[in-house]
Image (cartoon, rainbow, N blue to C red):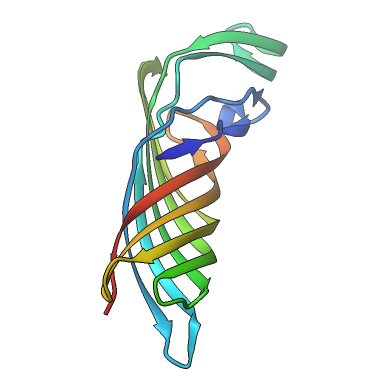
Length: 195
């Protein structure tokens, strides 16, 4: 399960670049993924892994506040505006490369890790802007940290559970025109095969 924080440090892009907005709440989402890893024979406590994760932390319908200079039919106006914003579909895909340190026990192996991520996000809202639906995507680097443990049922099969924190920033251009920081707390469980 992915427990995202709000889109934070929201600000406009392009013609809206002077605007600063309130945080945008995101919904809890299932998270799916797969990973593959390798532990070094001479240093069996140290390894590397690659993983791919997918979630849908949709933006909730909410009331927001924007501050800055607004472009109006009568010219630029500086001030604060509050509006109701409809929800939007958000898709998030993450590819990560992590370094893992583990306790190399026979049955129980706690571990920690840190890694570099590449994150792809797509924002889609039916609410019209400039006469059409708002749709934009962005790819951005980020990082994650994780802690977990695995318990071996057999020599080759283990159950694992981990906590993962991810952080990145996105610039949604096109006709969406805002940038924001994204972070999420992820609780992940699964089955791992060992060779």
